[in-house]
Image 1 (tube, rainbow, N blue to C red):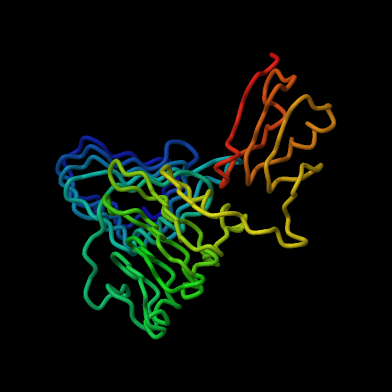
Image 2: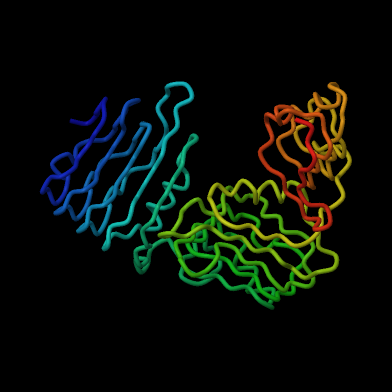
Length: 345
């Protein structure tokens, strides 16, 4: 059988592998998806020819003797084509299971909405593979902890081709004004339980924190680990653009974000408002709400991001239904917090 139209569920069996299904190439379903869990003897999945899973869920977990996934050709992971369908991926803890960087890369590039949770360690990289364990010219994938300090120009040049960091990135007391030495970085996928995925600290000359191509700071969590981003450049000229903050806010994982600095002045023509306007989705600056006319509240209905503080005081409101689309409030000003007070309900 090459194509399965329907769900695949394997639980509470004594198989060591699913190699008897090795001919399977595609699984397509809008029902339960793929579930391989609670199999006490299983050491691998072993679907060696599987290329595509189109389903609401892919779950592999709680198989106590599993050591490897061994799904080498799985490249297409996407939700069902049913409208509004998501795909959730879970590779859950098994004591001996590890994930290769190639497997992680495929999960990073899963298409469509949905959560991805991977709570297993990385396998040791294979010598001679396509992953570097230290920076090298022409390297696109680096495995391990990356520490950047006061580096010479030739060493920073080695990072210009890097697209994936399978580990964490720490930039500490570096003589950098920007991150333009990482123009192609797309993903940082950290499985380390001790270090934050991104630490930027003590960089007195830093002006901007833009990663031009980054798509995620790692939606993959080690066991019990929330993802931490800490940006504290300690530079008097440092500022954060709203695009940079939006990139950090959309990191796709629970955890702590610490950004110390101020917002950069908006660029003329940028898609951001400095005061509420009809159709505006992003507002830079503090938003104060008091006893407002209906037409002014109507302007806030499209707002998704407030890059500043929100203060609602002595307002004649019964609810916050004038902010139905608000997703994030990102305030860098300690003197103007998010404030709520003296409502006239």
